[in-house]
Image (cartoon, rainbow, N blue to C red; front, side):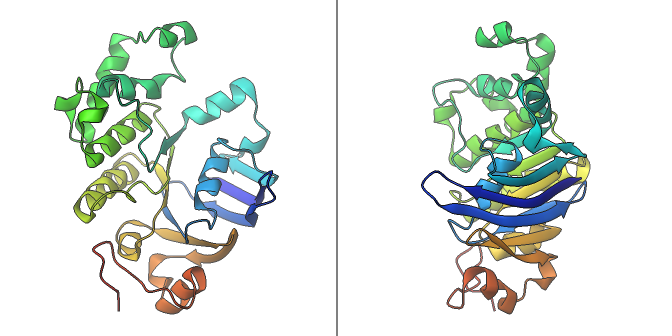
Length: 257
C-alpha cells in the first residue's frame, strides 16, 4: 500500500506546488491523477520516487518511509518503483535494447553497467519485456527511428526491467494521438491486471479516466479537491477540479455530455 500523508512541496522560487496532500493507494489499484497543467500532478509523482524531495509530509510504500530513505535504502526502494515519462526520456542515438537494459541498472554491478555490459539473463529479460509491449523486432533499432507510440512502449519495457510493484506514469499519452493513447494505456492495464502492478497515472482526458482507472484523485493549485471512483466524477465535480469554464473533452476531441 502507498500512503501519502500531508505532502507539501515548496520550490526555491516560492512556488507551492503541493499543499498538505493526503491519500492512500491500495495494492493493485489503477489510480488516475487529474488536474490542470501546473496543478501538481508531476510534482506528486516525482516526490513519490524521490526524483524531487518533498518539503513536508511523509510517503510510505509498504510501511517503509520513502521520504526518510537515503543511499542504498533509497536505491532499493526505487528498484520497485517504475517510472514512465511524457517525453519518453530515451537515449535517442542508442538502440532500443540498450535503452531497455538501462532499466536494470539498479540490479547490475556499477562497473559492468558503466561499460554497458549486461548478463545474458538480463538480455533475455529485455527481449521478453519488448515482446510484452509488441515490439520485439525493434530491439536493435535506434530509438530515434521509432514512432512516438513505439518510443513510449520502449519506456514501458524499460520500467518493466525493474520488476516494479508500483508504476508511476507521468502523462504518458499526452503527446500521442487517440489510437496510440488507448494502445499505451491498454499495456498499462494489462500490467495492472495480469501482474498486479499498482499504477498511478496522470491523465487529462476524462474518457480515458473512465475507461482505465479504478479510482481517481484530482488536484487543483496543489490541493487535493477530489477523491473517488470514476463514476463519481460528474460534470459538477469535474468543474471543481478544472474550473467553471472547463468542458469535459474526450481524447478524440469531442465534448462529453
